[in-house]
Length: 304
Ligand code: PSU
Ligand code: MN
Image (cartoon, rainbow, N blue to C red):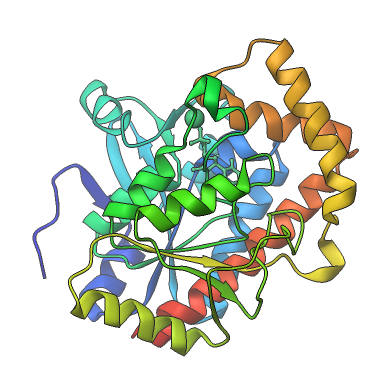
């Protein structure tokens, strides 16, 4: 087993699973601190861990606490993070800063992928990845999640890219970067709150074992980067595209008018949408994260 970086702290449960070669699923913390309001964020994080366990894998929620990268955190530490109003949002660029300064921080998809890979974890469940933002021509706002998917070998299970993004350009960027994008039991690329973005999923697989086989083939071929599995939100919880789009346009107009930029854009849009949909977007978000945790657990088990 490769030597671990001294900046990583594995929970006892994750360390034991790693020693025994049992399946592990990484979980991110930005969705907890910046993606959902308290206390639903904490309830969801706890339930997502339980779902991974029920699928036969060990959950490893990842966050930086006092400059150390925790892979698997205690319920108490998770509760403290979830209640912190001003915690840092850490992407690739911010991770060494948080470690060097002894800060607390929540890891995005990009930073969680890095930490998972350093701990030998190959599967990761989240809500939706970041991507190319609408208006990219002016802002050049492209999430570091895309670059990370191109370089770090972790399978990311999501409900597609967030519909607040420019989805055609997000898919183009993934293709350019050589990231396999797999629709799970769907021909349509899902759009987070909606099951169908109106764009085709580039690839399709219908079985966790088939996804495990794709991951293994990619490893044998020594291809860099991750695999993106796009798992549509369960039907009863979805907000159809036609319905959410008007709210998205309003949320983007409001955050632009307020001068929101850089890493505040995604959290600000999510919280505007929560208000505009009168809480419905949060119910959908919870349902899709749970659904992704289950599939990630199944993929991790199939990978062995
Ligand atoms: N998905 C959610 N809620 C979130 C995020 C994703 O359901 O809060 C977070 C993820 O951590 C993702 C980040 O990596 O938003 C993207 O932020 P940005 O667009 O600034 O890269
Ligand atoms: Mn950005």
